Length: 451
Ligand SMILES: [Zn+2]
Ligand SMILES: [Zn+2]
Image (cartoon, rainbow, N blue to C red; front, side, top):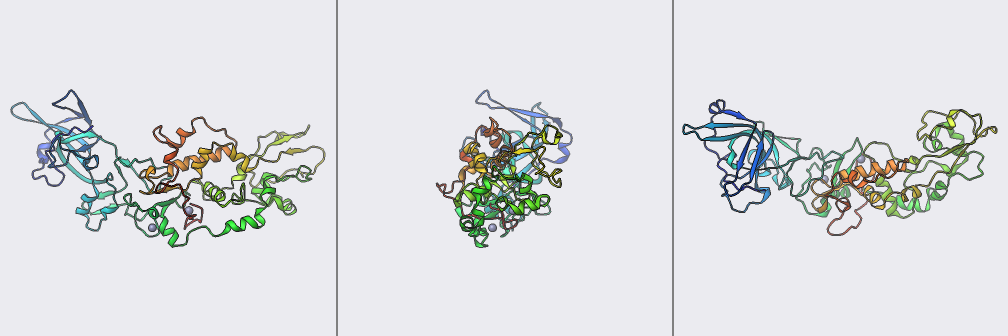
């Protein structure tokens, strides 16, 4: 892929930039093609392409690592005609600076926290000769607060900042969108405790260093014990919540929206609104997994996983109206029952809903495992790449919610989660330092959700 041509111009060292007055009289082109002298290979470069450029002073043919290339966007292409009939093709480019380049301009900039393949898009134009252009590359835009950041392999150019050259300003200011410590995400930091946990909720969407969370005591209290022995541990009766002979079958809305059916709720304490905390299993690790699963990228509300499971209503009424024929409603907010449930002439049999455990058991175990991962990025999580598993887990959680709500498992769920056939479960499962040991049960400092 590397052409290995000699770079004849440079970013800042260049002594004699092409005068702008010459440029304006040159003939414009949309692209240029370079033929390698020693082969039949042709390389085409177009306007708007981002190109890897052989650094100034590097001899062709010498070994160069991919991350050492200079990177620039081709903004314009023009040919300079010489009296002898030959011509020189020039490109007007806009540079992507390396961390070290920026540190030369902005003294306070910490280039140590910039990845080797990271570039900073600068508002700095320059003219380069086409011969120094090596290959077309991609520079992925990385938004640290995005719930679906594109996966960034560790040998892939990416950028998250821009540089205003004259103002000597970096935007966004490093660290302002991250942890309580205001230190930015450092993709070079290998230490396991410096991985960042991401809270995907809409009003959070922020990543925190594990070490900062632990130092601030942002971790789950010993509520697991309370679950195990407290009143919430009647989870068995929550799951099988409607006794077959009950005079007043509880409705789903009774669980989720207490107001219209307050008296029912009071008389059947075993169907008190419950949560994922108590459901399914009494083991703390499983509860932690469900709490992670319940942290939604799409709502700031607590997601009651159990309440997602639709209720099946079997109508036995002869003369009843269409209401009973309606598909089961998940949400009945503000809609009190029209008929007293005890009315003898017609009745709708409310099937006991499937338990959360039963519904989860129908989800492919790998999909569920991804959805129950903490959202993490950091150099110690090698297979998470630069951007971590956040996008995968976001999409896996959405799929799990949909399946709990009654959708079937899509055949291509892997592709939906990974958005690429090159990636797989190993890229989503957090593995730090060679082990899958569970990370500490940290919570979001803002919303207190498990993260
Ligand atoms: Zn921090
Ligand atoms: Zn949060």
